[in-house]
Image (cartoon, rainbow, N blue to C red; front, side, top):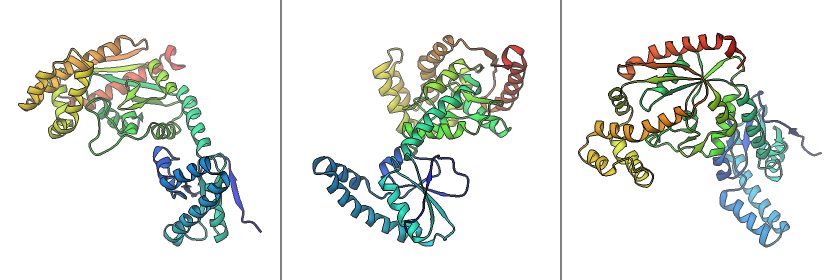
Amino acid sequence: MSPHIENITSFEFDRGEVIIDVRSPSEFNEDHALGAINLPVLSDSEFQRIGTIYKEVSPFEASKVGAALVAKNISKHLEEFFCDKPHTRKFVFYCARGGKRSRSMAQVCSMVGWSTGVVEGGYRAYRRQVMSGIEELSEGLKLVLVGGKTGTGKTAILDLLKGKGCSVLNLEELAVHRGSLLGAHKDLEQPAQKLFETRLFEKLKNFNDEEIIFAEAESNKIGRLFIPVALWKKMKEAPIFIIENQIEHRVNYILDEYDPHFLKEEAIPNLLSFFDKKSSAVDTAKLRNFVQEKKWEEFVQDVLIRHYDPLYQHAISKRTASIIKWLEIDQPVEHSLDSVCSELIASCSTYWQSPNNASS
């Protein structure tokens, strides 16, 4: 009698199943269902080898060689991962299409005695779910954007809002980037575009249509990642709360946020290379002198005045959506965060209570 393998039609799990992605490590690293673990039945090199045999020799020969490799790898996983798992545990497997790779491991585990399932359509079905979900969920968002020039503490404000119980969509956190040429996180890599979209989809699922969602006013690109079209369209239409602060306070805040050694060794070479290629407004020779002389305040101020501030002004001038409030402050950024949050919450409440905006 063949072991029973449940055919699962959705990636919605809530019964304590262990979700196992059996694709190769490279496929998994590019994107995967959140919460899944990777137990590949073929390594990257093995997967590539089978593909070559399939194309250059025959499908039968590829299946024969592949079966031997899959059996070897499943045996290894049984000895290392599954060996201490109780009989009551349920495992759900998926591969690229819900085919041979996932069913091979599911069949062996079912024969051992575990409850198993295979997701129909595999990762490709999940990917379709992610992209259609982002489009549908973005449409219903009640977004408010937090805007302001570089160094006004927008990310810190989002963190404070979250701490006060507000709903926050922190795109820079999902993208592992601070949103500017200074923004790469030291020792952390940005995810692949597909994995960024998966994280975004799972985040959007947690919101409802009635709550106000705060997000930073971004460009459509964060580092090397792009905001999906549907969400970007919603962001362009969203009302915005703008924070202004004096440049000396912004410079000091940036220098507090970024370690000067990191600036010198990691971020500044990228900045100078970018300016050499893209911007005639920036005097890179002067900037290099600032770096040599460790004049960090002058360096940051010059970059803000000549590059970031003009970009920001251009972006704001193109916005057609409502400006909830333009808040001007003149104190150190870190001292203004609490009062800005309170003002933002109060202004948004007033804005959404207006009959003209309540149905937006």
